Amino acid sequence: MPEVRLGDIIDDYCVKCKRIMNHSVVSLLNSGPAKVRCRTCYSDHDYRHEQAPPPKADSRKAALFNEVLAKVQPDSAPAAAAAPEPAAKPKVKRKK
Ligand SMILES: [Zn+2]
Image (cartoon, rainbow, N blue to C red; front, side, top):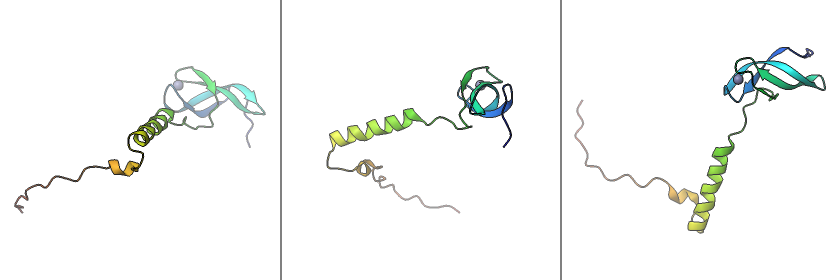
């Protein structure tokens, strides 16, 4: 396993650039990178092991949505709110 040193350039996820970017190691912990600095926007952050942060907003919104559904319709499952049946369309003669 290669040893990481201060100033080394490693890949990590940058929350500002929203993608994997080159980062320089600015802090070490247990001979691994603890903090890194994006080489593109120069923002410091904890080393993320190249992982994007979980989409918190989406999961929270979904939980809230299910909560509201449960209050409004306690007996019906969320599946009941599925798409309505397609309206009967007059069939058009197919042209080939
Ligand atoms: Zn960046």
